[in-house]
Length: 307
Image (cartoon, rainbow, N blue to C red; front, side, top):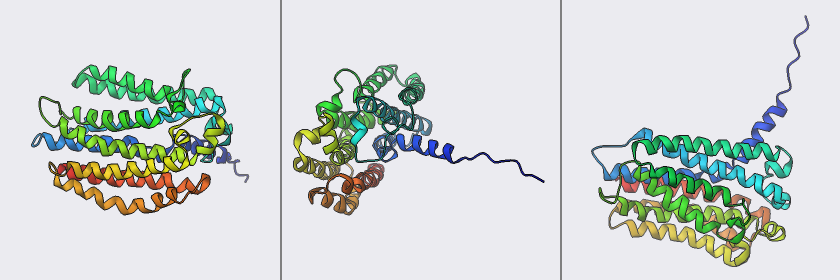
């Protein structure tokens, strides 16, 4: 008896893998950590009220969807400009031909729509001003590599990442837990947002250091390109060191945040790699290592805030 022919699932699996890679999972700690830390601030500030889990989940959906939408739009915009044609890291969807520009743009818009839906839910139970803030976040994600003068090409990416994935995301996550200037806790959230923002900036710098040669040849004037390889390496190191220093500054109010210093041994290899003058593919492990530093320091910071 003849068995029915099975459809070859390998092309489908390759397609799914390409789209998952296109979401740039190694960058997602930049979205998760500020929500975790901001939520910890909210929980700490409003005991015994406890944690509003659904609000924390909504904030996490917003942050992740904005990050993924931004990543897809960067793929789309850089692919059209030809910036990704000579990149060192993993192949991008548009540049590699794995997906059409229209499909990648649609994925970006769908991600932003998911963020908008979750954001409206949070705004309905807090303040409708969150809708305006969300619109600013969407614009920041879209204009990073899009529009007539993308700010990522002007060397401003690190500043915006610190602001949005540090200050805005951390304080916003605390706010939806009930933290305000009047109720108390917002000062703690602002202080905690500094190491969070510096860790996100280090993650971006690790990416830009890896691609500095290709970005320079493509006319993408990131801050790493503008500073040059050596000074950009010290900026990366400074962000890691600044995150540790920021935790020390918090210690008079929350002594247990010094737990974050336990993560510093994880920084030895990536710091050594960037300072030893490694270039191109030799810097590929630095991005993953920086993401691990960000996750561990972020979790320890959140634990320290709660304790």
